[in-house]
Amino acid sequence: MAVRALNINEQIDAELPHEQLEQRMEKLRQQAEQIRILPQKHAAEWADYVEAKIIARKKSQFVQLERLKKPKPAASQPAVPQAQVAFKPIDIQWPADRIRVGLVNWVPVNDDRAIIGTSDRLAWLDRDYRVQMFAGGGGRPPFTRVEFDGRYVWIEGTVGEVPDVWLIDPKTAQWKALPLADLLPPTTGGFTISPVAPGKAAAIGAFGGTNGSPARTWFAIINIGSDMKATAEVIHEATDREPEGIVAARQPLPNEAFDPDRSTTVHSIDAEGVAHTHVLVGWYRVLDVEKRKVYTLKPIFNTMNDDPAVYDGAIWHLKTPTPTIDNKPLQLIRRRPGAFNVEVVEKALPFDGKDFPILQLISIGDRFIIRRADQVFVYDIASRQLAELPLPADLPAAQLRWVDHHGKAMVIDQKAWEIYAVTIEMPRKLPETRESEKP
Image (cartoon, rainbow, N blue to C red):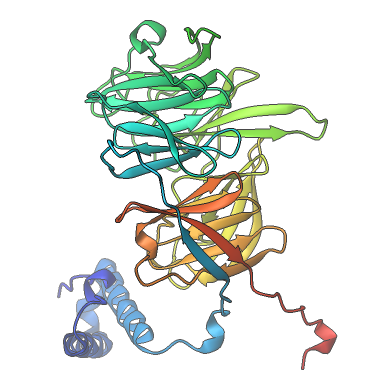
């Protein structure tokens, strides 16, 4: 007797009417009863180990459904207090002759100013959020990344599969395209660029190969002179192929080619007061800018956010303690430059891993904003306190993109293209009860 293993996701649908959900539950209840009886009456027919495993899995899924239907005990998950939050709309003073288009980025620059990115333009804002100047347009491709290195604005865009990079001097509004074809090796695969110092950036690209596996990955340093003239030097090339049949969680080797898709710059100071700059590329590659060396990291399992947060010279992730995310508290971990070993900062944040992945984890001042599909939380690093941010009905969590504006929280409504300045007041933290004082 062959019994098809039921997928728990096929059985649970939060949008189902109550009657249909009850019907599914009753059907599973009847099937589970047959499974309980059949092995006793037909033991000889159940010798096949695989069939027995399928039946056991089906019983387990039925039990999970029963648990989901029952209300959870109040003590199963600690209550998360709510912070006080205020959203102040920012009235961007657009020039009258400019058509307003969707906002895709907000980049803080010097003197409390900011650059806002649209689909193909950049606008400089003064302290009163008035648009001082525009740059871009003219048929340029959509921007995919905008970064500021302390001197120049670096803009990454793509025409088909070919990357483009531009520089803008905020003081003069001079706009210059970098001649990547003359500066860097070919790029037919992934490409990413990450500023590391004023007038300096790391670029990583790949080319060649078949079936999505590049033949060569290169790392380069681009330097920009005072006249905005660019020079570049390739400091590492990886030409080995990853062995076939290797699982994704394997730690790669530095000389194995890969497709770079994103990069994050991490500035840190060691115990002797020496400054260091590292670039995390993807999940497992690190470029040590000062040593001009590439090394790899051990995998992190069960991470919930794709892009790490950067704070206090380290990269931060949220992860679950086990591969099963249901009703498991989340852990806050960090990896410091050097060995980049995993340190668990919070073993059990008091909310579970539902609605993964975490859509955004970002450090703003001395706090982390944690955004998922249905809720937004703030974690105060100094007090190690977590609070939920109550949101207005017209600002659902899924459409909000949080940004750091010189240590202040800003949020972009990605549907209405509005910008808000956000003030957050953490709830009063109750004093912890000592063991001797507990009832």
